[in-house]
Length: 303
Ligand code: SF4
Image 1 (cartoon, rainbow, N blue to C red):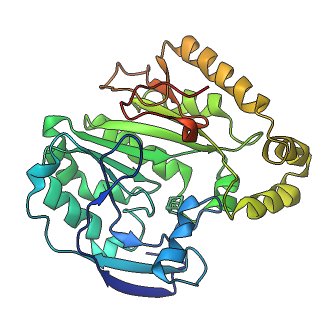
Image 2 (cartoon, rainbow, N blue to C red; image 1 turned 90 degrees about the horizontal axis):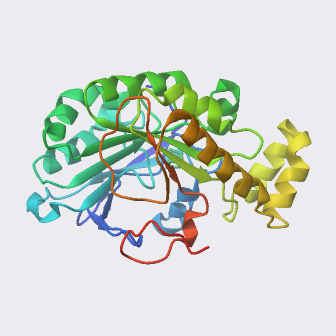
């Protein structure tokens, strides 16, 4: 286990289940505070403000302790998203096993469990994942926004893209619904067609989400582009300073064309879904999903 974490603490919490404030409802589960993956674009770094941490994002971690979930059935039919402001399968999970713990507590709950990760440590829990998946209520998602390992290394400290893709395939082959989350899409750097072509036979869903630079990390990303990809700087200024959306509008059209080419459904924002025939993952357009309105999971965007 190798991480940049220099400070590990523990924190007691009254419940590990947090009601989501997303319009789609459900619950979030984050067994840790902080995240060693330290993605440069991490919106979750705002957590520092609420948890009293002043250290650099990625250098600290609090391991959560919670009272056992007393009535797991209470979450039946609800969506439960594991890993919204941390990666539950970060390298410290090897030692602390808090994500495995919460999966054990929720395994018979009947909740729709979604695990979001950038790791292959999830394979350690394959026995449990298979057990949970007996009722088809499990989905595992990996974030992959490039096939270029050097860009990945610039952006995060998680495992290689190849390891993520290998894990996705193993989980998919076990009959568990998988997602390739192409997020965030970096203009000029993320080749969505190459990624879709690579993963189409090992996932049921492909989620597309644009890079959003409203947070405190805007400067970090703009500085990175200026230093490593200066030819793209005018494009980034156009999109993120002048608020020109034409790049992403064109990319939406391109994604729709790719969907047609591969015989995939292309849907706007989240819609109910099932497993799909191999090679034809449903492509879900989450570009500018922050504009979604309504509480009925209508899949309609406020255009
Ligand atoms: S894996 Fe997710 S929570 Fe962790 S640093 Fe990256 S974006 Fe943030």
